[in-house]
Length: 121
Image (cartoon, rainbow, N blue to C red; front, side, top):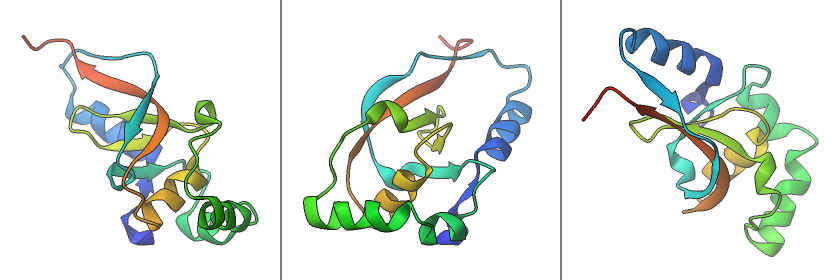
């Protein structure tokens, strides 16, 4: 599953280039239930192989296995949603994003800022 992850920064840069001439804005982040399978990007300072095997992942995975997914500390699970519904990690939350997707959890809560077009009727 690791090959499916892209760089958040590259995805944002590509979106900006593809939408040159369009008017877009980013709405303030709100708590939302999201489908982790729609998360396609993690921050540049991480590689999937580092996240899946690092010291933070083991206790997180053990906790989820033991207690199920608990929507706690949502403010530190920050995502950006593009108009097509794709999501990227924009701050904290890389480990939770990877784990939720790996475990095929159907829905999790996160702080989500939405990018919307403002030049459409």
